[in-house]
Length: 357
Image (cartoon, rainbow, N blue to C red; front, side, top):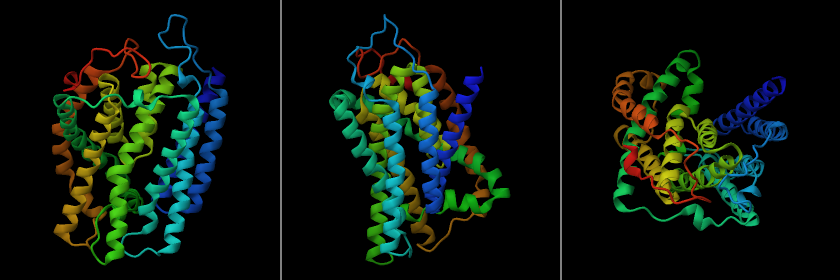
């Protein structure tokens, strides 16, 4: 019992360190970000030493030569944390080269450092472990399957907006500066047309948000980490654990929890990483286009304030009213169990995306 409490405390500290790193990066507090990142590395290292890895039973279908036995969870988490450090360094360099004026170059380059390092790191680690990425990727889905999955992005977006208001409205009453910085000041993600430099910087931010983030996050969380932790703890625990880590690194943790869960289910059932990447691209693209619409209507110098955010309670209520029935039904129908198999290795299975509606 005592050891379990220690593990729980260390795990909670690790998540807290990751949250601190994510906020510090987002708020441009670079020194704090570096210390939070180092703290996360330390706590995850301790957690790895304390946590007992589940042994695969003799009758388990997992191949004893499964390359995910060599691609450890510690390696994957270290790559992710290294990505945060790399993103910090690249962002600092960007702000030093071009002081923030309009859209900040540092924040626009953050995604390139973070996702570039993460992509390179998991590629090298997976190659050394002997993982065949073509089996991770799977086949491109049939048009009907793809359209049904893409349609699910609509309620996921509605749920995300509604839960953002529920989460941040109480915080805004006591800490409005945090909400403004963490949630509302997304200057690198909205196109600024005031001069060629701002257009270039805004374009970099858009590419990072709409292209790099969906591709690298889905490859990392659903392609590799989900497989590794399924081998360690089983499919159910892996879906939950990867979803929690994924959600903790986003500004809308409640919406990201449902989104991450849905992407894990889609991937396991369709065996198509391309499908979940396209869903993620559509999700981020819609969010980005909404920012463009706001800029076009209000002007490039308009500011979305905490007061504006608080007044949109009725929009949040409508979004939740439309999304909650779908979310409850989706989770109840698609909670994973140990009878499922992972795309790599495992049987092809008989599940289809038509079961997700």
